Length: 160
Image (cartoon, rainbow, N blue to C red; front, top):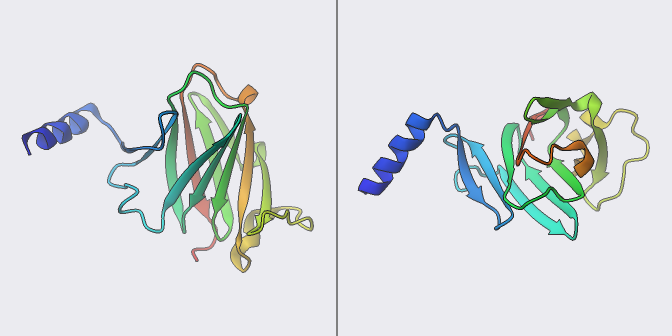
């Protein structure tokens, strides 16, 4: 009990704004303060790594922010961020002083089976009626190798 009170005091005094969830020995997800995986239903984040590709699946019905923290030496060659939302009103990804907004990112809509929606010009409002996800591709060359954190913020167009 004393330890948890001490820990809570240290976190409050340090200005920590995110709760931590260790995904593996290689990555950690930081949630906004007060938000944890346990109380975030249906807010859910899953990480899978295949060789040099990291896949980050984010399920959220609204507005959200997470920080992906790298614990290993280098970023994987490729980072795929998959947002399972009803429609993507906005997204920003930042690392240090660099920020990518929606128009700066490669965003593609996919159906639930992983097939691209080829008819889309601007897919951000597409998935209101259809199930699927938006995928943002980043390569390690776009990321600062010396910064171990990436902040991802999104706004869902339509709350399912």
